[in-house]
Image: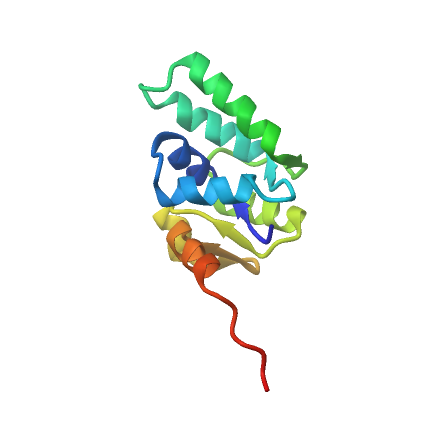
Length: 137
């Protein structure tokens, strides 16, 4: 896996079946290796799911257990709730990847921070569907 997923991707996938984030999560979590996440990401996902009235406490707990079982949580330094850029850049670096998948407009507007690129789920899915170029002759 050459990317990490931002909290909004997990949340959007949890509430919108058939959406680009849901397709991204299926592909990421269904791969041969577990994607990396951080405690900060897991805390944000849980907080965001709890803020959705349709998600009952039991459903949140079950969804979080499912997500945790499918990712490897890596250690990063502690970040405040609002430190999305810093926390996601630290996660990407800890995971050894150069890209974060997100549909958060503020993150996408920054494009790259500290050598880490922010990519939308639509763009990433398009990349995955595009065959590689033929070998040079």
